[in-house]
Image (cartoon, rainbow, N blue to C red; front, side, top):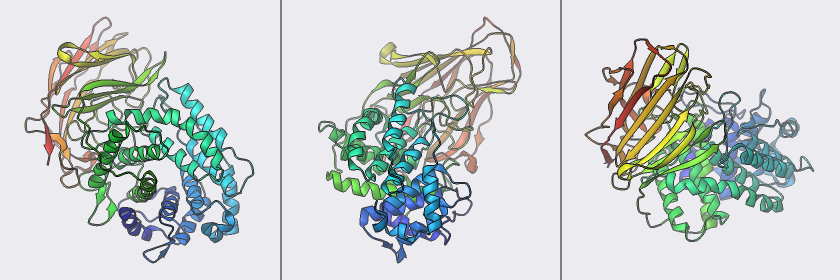
Length: 577
């Protein structure tokens, strides 16, 4: 709670008279930020019961933010949802809600209109409809409650849209199958909305339905979370959000008694590690704020520092309340490190297969997540199908590079062996090694567009100790000219100051990278030094060097011929003390 007070105290000055948010230098505010601030203030009130912080009136500040959000020329779905829950945090009765009393009649009318207006979304925006419905009914703006139906529709789409019963944040265009941490955040947000619902019986009826699918994510937490506490590391919303979403889901599950007593010690240990990583990696304890961007690290362009600070304050207040309800000490015996390979199926249908392969080796510390999911955003490396291990196998936070996978360019089509597969198989190989294999009947671009009739690719990854081998076999349907091929290796390190003790990094011997076979006849080019280039920061630290293996000359590829390139990695993994 002390951290939440400090973060809020440092950011209240950013709330202007009209409820807009002043950005930090070098950043631009988003239209939804007043809503994020309103919910952070609401959670502060719920956690403390106080209406004043550092001499500032919390009720007045929250009313300003809500007024700005409800009267915006072009309202945003998330801004409306966050601000409505912020209002509801001060009480479900209009007569006894101090924030409602400060809203003008025009703002109240606009709120009634904005909360009623709802579009049916197939993506994560559907959770904002649920929050708006909760607020509209609970504040007495409507006698009809659609919350139950909206939750049922959200869950039904998961049931029908994913064989593994995971949430697919379907894009408006491009390949579906965006299975990243949006699923975790969606369940956390829905559960938080239900907690504020005026009808407690609805909450009791819907929690079992939520539990059925939310537990899918809880079950993979022991495999996802690294021994040093690093959480979700593929897809969108990584870095600080990759930690906070996981922490919130575990705490909510503990509060709702979703975790059996025999599993509680393990989950307590995971929770402790997640929180320690978040605390030591992203909290600037000297200045009392959340730091997601500095000279060594950055975040995605869809997140501002101000928004992240208000969200962090909200989460910390929420965690404080949940911890009091759970009433258990955070001390837990550390679970012994695991070894093994595991494939988590997200979807398996006739059109495509998607999931994540997780490999761990207790002796060496190797722990990678290799995702096969659709890209949730363009020009990003975070959803590419390579072994993700921050500190060892790094990638830029907000930039596309073909990290550890070949990129083949045919005219204006830039292809990558990522995003989807068919005939995904995993199992034990020779000498207790693990393998993960899949095929792409049609090549796919880096933006997630499947190219019919061009060619195909077979991918095979094998893991043995610290040694990783990736073999990529290409075939084309008709004679075609390959314009270029390249593959890149990023050499980075954890943050020099903000990191947990004993976090993983690359040892003196490096990544042990080599090309065993190459039918494309590429060459390693001179190593590029990018230590001072701000475009090559990760969510956790800095990339110092880029090694590129490429073929720039055109090459004619013929049908009936297989073209292979085999990458070998044998890194020395060290602990950054």
